[in-house]
Length: 187
Ligand SMILES: [Zn+2]
Image (tube, rainbow, N blue to C red; front, side, top):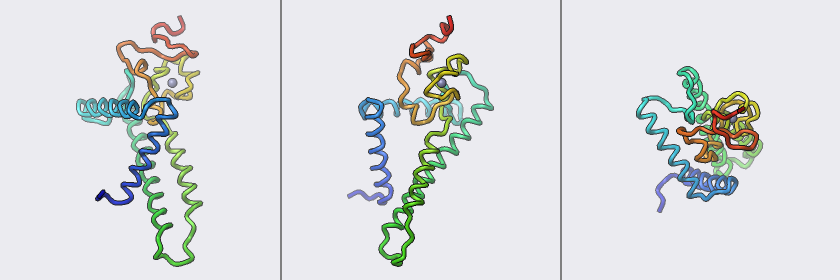
């Protein structure tokens, strides 16, 4: 028997469904998705241990301390907002299901819908990491689809990143549909 509170079990189920959907959307197996997510988590933890601070995935791009701190604080706000929206939705559903509340129970549906919109909005907010596809090369970034020219990608986009774009020993970008080594851009 699972001893965890019901909400925790439900949240776990929701995560599993979302994971299967994401894997299907990007055309990889759930196992491969887990592998990428774990590799990303380990890399971040290692770096965090070394630097003693929140780590931003930069894919080898050099950025200053101020920008690093700004990204960390924005990402923290994104993560907190998301977690709080998820919590609020779970609580409202508990109220909605409750049988001890009076007959004229308010309808929570419109609020739940608004919260879902907020959740999607927060999900799409950048930055979680610097963009590995343009690596801040101005002429590539201008036309970069994954980061929409901002130079940042979202957390959910991070699991899509193919290994060749994370290889810091041989940095490449995606320029006009081709994979190009960064020194060769525009040549
Ligand atoms: Zn980009």
